[in-house]
Image 1 (cartoon, rainbow, N blue to C red):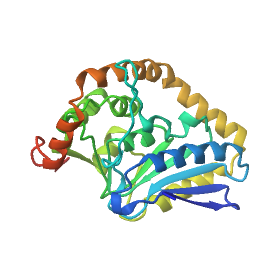
Image 2: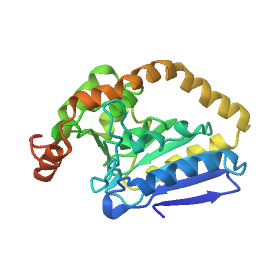
Image 3: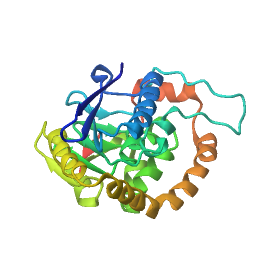
Length: 258
C-alpha cells in the first residue's frame, strides 16, 4: 500500500499519508488508484467528517508523478490520459473538508492535491515549485489549480521559472497559498487541530459550505481545464527529450528561494 490512513473516531478525523518517502512521495499508478478509492470510501464513512492529507517524512509532501511510471496513451492526437486527474477529493465527489499539511517540497503534480484541499498548512521549511517548463512540459492543470489560490503574477512566475525558483512557506503564506506556517515537523499536528474543530460542527452544514466555496471558482476552473489537453499536446516536448532534460537536470539555472 502506498497510502496510510489513521482514523480518530472520537474526533471524526482521518489522517491520510502518502507513504513513499524513498520516492519523495511521488505518485505512481498504484498510488493514484489508492487515492481515488480512498476519497470514494470516505464519502460513505460517517465516522470521518474531515481529513488531513500529508506526506511521509520531512523531505517532501509530494513531488508529482513518479518519473519511472509509464502511462499508456491511446493512439490518438485527440485523447490524453492523465492518471493524476482523479487523485483529488473533489474529483471523486467528496465534499468533506480536506486540509493539506506540507513538510518539505511540494511540486508539479502535488498541485492536483493542493488545488482540491480546503486550505494548506505548511512548515516554514516547506517549498513550492513547478518544474514543468524546465523539462519541456506545459504546466496546464497545475497552473490552473494554483490560479484558483494565488494572484496571476505569482502563478505565472512560479510556473514559468521552473526549477530555478522555489517559493518559501513565508512567501506562499503572503500570497494566499498557505493559511498557516508552523515550526518544522508541526504541519500535520496543526492541520489535525483545525480538522478536529471543523469535524465538531454539524457535517451537513460543513459539507454545504465546502461545496459553496468550491462553486465560486468551479465554472472558471472547468472552462480552463477543458483547454489543458490541447495545450499539453501542442507544447510538450517528446517524452524522450523530456527524459534527457530530466536526467541532466538541465535548463533551470540554480534554484533559489523567495
